[in-house]
Structure formats: structure tokens, C-alpha cells
Image 1 (spheres, one colour):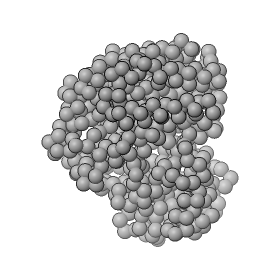
Image 2: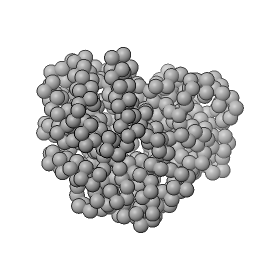
Image 3: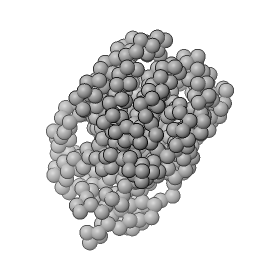
Image 4: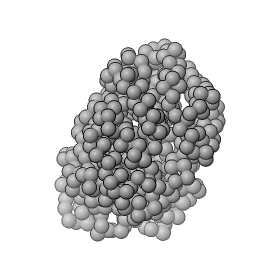
Length: 471
């Protein structure tokens, strides 16, 4: 069969000048479909108008199955893409999967005229391959794990499948990509997954809704083989896309040592990490520096005790200071993730977050507004407290547009203070003193500056943090 796997064009951030990230999950699904003709398209790389490009591609390729991956904030785009597919290739079966399908399957399948034929909940690799077998007559639809499918116009919902044994998954098949121009600044970028899931119970996170509170790891030998393949393909920067790689910091240290032992430190590495996890093993940060990890996104979330308690993060303030200090000491750039707009936040609490980012000397602050994503505990709590101002328009759920109010601030006031403090932070002279981007990347620093100008223009026009692409 001819199978097309599509990733949506919307990005959850506005760092389009800095990084363009591929969908690794679709390549992982493709690796289990070797008997079929598969193409993967990341629509974020379509620089012309998406509708015209997609219509032309569909007309030429004529897929039998179209698989679509979507986060919650991307679902509006997914609906548009599915309508284009339905019109151009009406014979194709349309399958929706990913986080939004998993967390909102009941609502999506209860819609009067769903734009898809099938919905897959949970991990897609085995389930999608099983669905293809069902569509070719090799098994029954009722036997496909996690599948929602229609009989007599009514959706039936199969039981979820077991969590996958990652040791049994083949390497992702990146050869099926139609578009490949993924970059970090001016360097060719690709992704690697070393583990999947998280055992923590942060109230704002949707990972538990996807995988439960599990943590599964790929073997380090497999990861080295994958990195060698990326090196062979000319990759210069690697983003580790783990949900929480620092749940096992000693394993992470071993991975860093293995990168060096196999001569793979010529590629630079980017990763997100928990504050607590990255300082557990004193060998970890020096090992990351030796392996050429150049940027760490730290999930700081807050510097205020009441908000850390609200997120169930624990009091990590001292660990935060130590983590940032050690990373900077070893020449690793720090991107600090913070969340504002929590129920008791007032203007002073929000300003303290921005002051803390300067005090900690974060190279790139990443301040988001708490977002009531479907399937999260925080959504239930904020809805019960009547603090959600936009429960349904999910395309605004990027994290950079406020969809809540606090007990002290309206949503308009919250948006205004977040935008103003962001602008002050990005253009403060202290932002450029000893900044990683300024020290190490002249072109990078210019792109960061241009990116920040984009942010300001977006704040004043009301189009902030939405995909630059239009259908």
C-alpha cells in the first residue's frame, strides 16, 4: 500500500529562526512498514502555501492511507489537512493519532461528522502497522490495539495496547522523509529518542495521559548505532527528545561517555532535563560538556515555593541555582523554562520570575503561561476554580498565549504583563553579558535578536506564537 504520514506545520514556539525540528515518531512508525511504500512529510518545512503544495503532492502520490499526527494546539490545522486529503484523494483512509487523539479520543469520535476514518490511542508503531494489516485483510479491525473505528456509523473503541518494549523497536527510518531541511541555527539537525515516558506527576503535564507513569529506555548500543547513522547522513546537531532523560542520570552519564568513546562528539547535542535530575550525578555535567552537549533546556517552572508546590515539583530552588551554575561553568548554554499564570499569581509574582531568570543568568528564558491541556490534572483543577477563560479554542494552546486568569489578574492583564516582561528581559543589557549565544555564535546571537523582534511584532499585532505558515 502507499502510505503518507503527515506532521502538522504549527510550532509550539516562535523560534523558527533558530530551530526546525522533525517528527521522529512518524519515522519510527515507518520503520515497521517495510513491506509498503511510505513517505513522511513534515509540513513545517513547506515554505510555500501549504494547501497548494499538499494538493499537488497528494495528486501525484495518491496514497491509500494518510496518517496524521497532532498535538492539541495543532488539531485545527489537522482538520484542514484532513479536509484537503478527503477532497484530493477520497479513496484514502485517514488515521489520526498522537497526543491529542490519545487524550481527547472520546470527544473527537463523538463529533457529528469526524474528519477521519480511524483514531489510534497511545503509541503508534505497532498499532498503525496492525491497522495496515487489517486494511489489507490480514487481521480484524477489532484486533488492532488502541483503535477507534466505525461500524454502522458508530465508533467502536478497542482496548489500549500494552506499552511497547523499546528494545524490540527497529531504528527510525529517516530515508522516507520527503523534506529534510531541519536546522539548528545554520547546522543540519535531527532527533534521537533515548527513553520514553516519565514517572513524575507534574500537574501541568500530559505525558502520563500518553504513557502512564512509566519510564522505558533504549539500549545504549542502539543509540550509538542511531547516532552513527546520523553522522553518516551529515547531521551536525542532535536534539534528544526524551520526556525526562534525567530520571536515570547515571545512564545519561554512560551515554555521554559512549558518545566520546565512539568519536561522535563532532556533532553537537541539545537536550531537555529536570533540575533535580541533572545534579544528582556529579559526573554528568562534565561528561555532557566532553560529549559536546551545547544547550540544556532546564524545566525550572518556578522560583516561588507556592507555585512549585502547586506543580508538585518540590522545593528545587537550591538545585536550580546549582544546575545553572555548573552548566555555565562547563560552557553549556542554559535555556530556562518557567511557567506563570498560576492561580495565586499577581503582578509581583510574575515579575519575580523574570527577575530570577536574570539573577540566575539564564541564556535564553522560555516563559510560558500555564495552559490547561486536555487530559491534564491542572485542566480539571483550573476549570473547577473557574479560572479557564478559553476552554475550547485549542489552537491558542501554544503556551505563549494566556488562556487562563488568576485570582488577581484578568487574562488581558496576564497577557500584557507577560509580553511586557518578556520584552524587557530579551532586550536587557544583562541578557547579552556573558550570554552563551553571544560568546559562541555571532550568527546565532543575531538570529536570537531577530527572533525577539518577531516576538514583539507578534505581541503588538495579536499574532504571537502561531505558525508562520498559512493554508
